[in-house]
Image 1 (tube, rainbow, N blue to C red):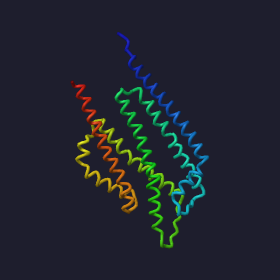
Image 2: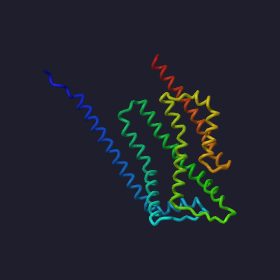
Image 3: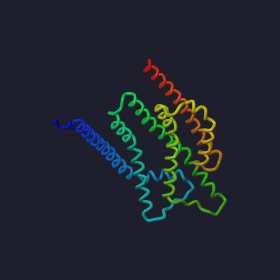
Image 4: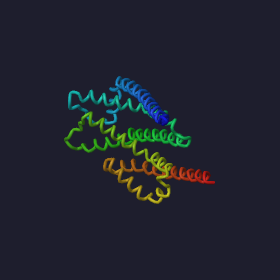
Amino acid sequence: MSKPDHSDEQLVKMSLVEHLSELRKRLIIVAVFFLATSSISFQFVRKIADQLMALGNGFRFVYLAPSELFMQYFYLSIICGVVLTSPVIVYEIWRFICPGLKKQEKRAICYALLSGFAFFALGAVFAYYVMVPIMLQFFLNMSSGISIEPMISFANYVGFISSTILTFGLVFEMPVVVMTLTRLGLLKPKWLTKNRGAAILVIFVVAAIITPPDVVSQTLVAVPMVILYELSVVLSKAIFVRRQNRQQQLEA
């Protein structure tokens, strides 16, 4: 009776061990960069806090617990660490998944990672320099003419700014999501064009939800989102045509 052949099983086990080893290597690199950038950011956290508080000119900031200020400084340093480490995270993700991809898949994933990073950064910058000052000014004006002094917890203030930036960063990912779904064949540009009216209506509803209840703020959010939707339609059409041409060449 012949002995069972365990070569395939051994290859699978070796492959799994190698993948886990590579993943651990990538995670260690990211962790080292994150700890380093967070530690450096903590040395400048007071200047970072001053920059954030400058956006809320007119508010008086307080902290309600003995440890609140320190914890928010720590939280800000972690956020800065994540932001500064994000290029390394994107690069290490790419290095980990790259060996197992085909040439076309490499190109698609590379575009998705780079464009996703760029659009998220664009949304974060838009939120910080445009929307956050407008929203803070709107809320500050609510107290004008009344005897209520605008004092705000520093923890709530930091949470408001970080959540606003995160929201707009995710909103600006719309073209990336559409491009990815089109590449996978799950979305067609015809559907986007056909439902343009409904999409614009949804955009204005979403803009009204995530902004103060005034027309200016809603318009400032809705217009970039509509532009992003139209850009998504153009990109989807280009990818869809290229995908069809590639399939026709393969079938010929």
